[in-house]
Image (cartoon, rainbow, N blue to C red; front, side):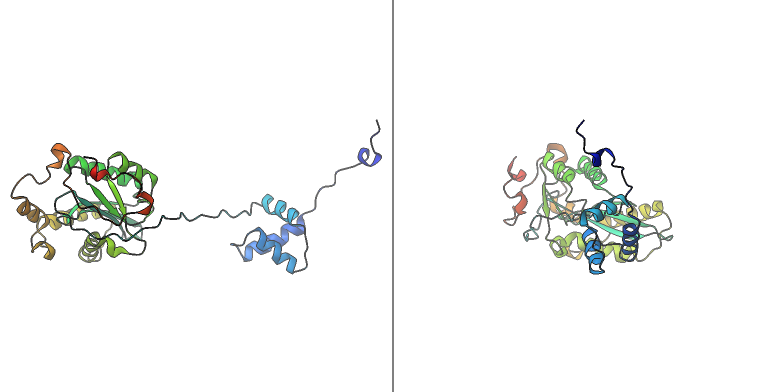
Length: 282
């Protein structure tokens, strides 16, 4: 057969990795966040010069691999001026808030504001408000009052989602992002957040989500119909809109879906500056 005797008589020997396993177990127990190469050099500095390939095999067999969360890099955001809208549905601002129930469970609030008359369009309350829930709220508002020309948000994970971007593209809505760490670029919704924090969230203890939803809705109705706003000449948002429109239909966009023109900012998101502007498509 011309087979070497060494091969014919070879008997497989089981690998004894007990020493390597014990050394790795001690390291990861003391330093849970270190990876393979940190373990390799720590052991080598102790005089335990195991081959790195052997160490990798034992490391993987022990399921010690650390799954690294890669931070999603944001495209560069350019400063955008806070334009004053001249008609309803020119600019909607959206933001999230967080609070806790009496038993310690946290819940979130999704705030939607029309910049024109500071009208609170929605305060959605739940323990979780993902992008699909945000889109559902926006669809409900569009069915009630028409489509906005622009939406301004921060860079939260729900807002930078591809689903929201695709939804805005399909509906010909311009999605504008503020610069990270610059909430003053979304000042209208931040002002409303301060009011709801001071007048509602810090003033009351909520025992259930149902109670939080009911009180937020009551606060929103009072905010729109009765609460005077200094920026609106001490009128409520709805009274200001009626006065400015001369008693005409408050939201004519629901009839013809035509948006009043808003001056386009010359500061746009670099990631979308080469895309066609939906404001000029009509």
